[in-house]
Image (cartoon, rainbow, N blue to C red; front, side):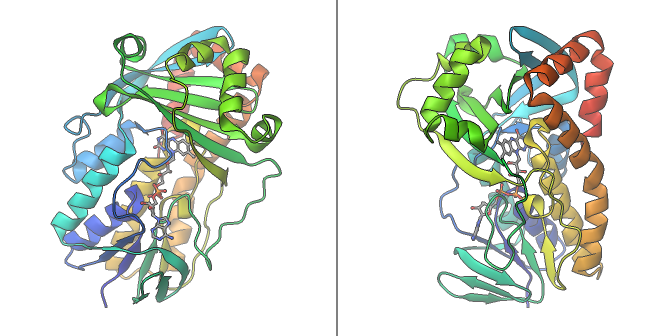
Length: 354
Ligand SMILES: Cc1cc2nc3c(=O)[nH]c(=O)nc-3n(C[C@H](O)[C@H](O)[C@H](O)COP(=O)(O)OP(=O)(O)OC[C@H]3O[C@@H](n4cnc5c(N)ncnc54)[C@H](O)[C@@H]3O)c2cc1C
């Protein structure tokens, strides 16, 4: 029976590509017929870019915006640090479309179905049952019944995303850089992407949304009024712009074991705090490693343990930085450190990579 890969994001598509290349004819299942823009900062680290080039997907050829500088902004203070190697701003629609197409070109069979539940050997879809000796679970931010990740944070992180329309003024401001605006209780990442639009993605404590009456627009307005540098960017957002949200992201969670025949990938294997911009690299690394493991006969529990060890350092380091960054004092400290000791910023960037 061919293996099943559930979820065609960066993790699942990468696994499907590696399995297909080895002649395993995987079935790649996703709930969405049309590839959308997943909620994500859209920053491809140099590690992500390397991995993509390794499978013949070139972020620059997809229109990715080259990024060479990190700008940390806390209050009125700004510090910049060069990235060790250039990264890219790329929309998830462009990336996921290219990865899916590559998986199919390599020999994966793409099927559209929404999984209701997953257990070893069986995916219960909305249209039918899918059976396989090996299932690669890559549903990312969405949990599926039978495989729910534990949520323990009292005030969990939630994600918000909007896309600022292309404008020459905004492009002049953001060219070549990714901005991280640090807030009490979270941050916003802003980067140009293919087509000249700018992706604005925030991770914030859920309590902030509650304080804004549960209204994402009111929350953005409040942040813009409290943090003038962020407010300047939000002036480029016309009223009525769509805001995507995702609730309760289990930052820091790592799967340390799994069931026989069930390989957990991407955010279903390890959730790194997103301000490090390494989630997609970890997702692709897990897809590649899990495919290799299965092809070499390594069972799922052993793969999961090994991958948990590999993801441990970047996820823990990103957790420390996220905890520091999400207080006004810590944010200012980080900005001062980045300005005074750029080598420290580079070391932090390196330590958060897989
Ligand atoms: C606020 C925020 C900002 C981020 N910014 C960045 C960033 O700038 N750079 C970075 O590298 N990472 C970033 N990340 C992390 C990154 O988005 C994830 O780590 C990455 O998308 C994980 O990839 P994945 O393939 O595991 O899952 P996903 O990208 O979530 O893909 C999952 C796939 O599974 C499908 N699926 C889901 N449920 C089902 C189902 N029931 N049945 C069938 N199919 C299903 C979906 O349609 C989707 O195609 C950010 C995360 C957050 C929360």
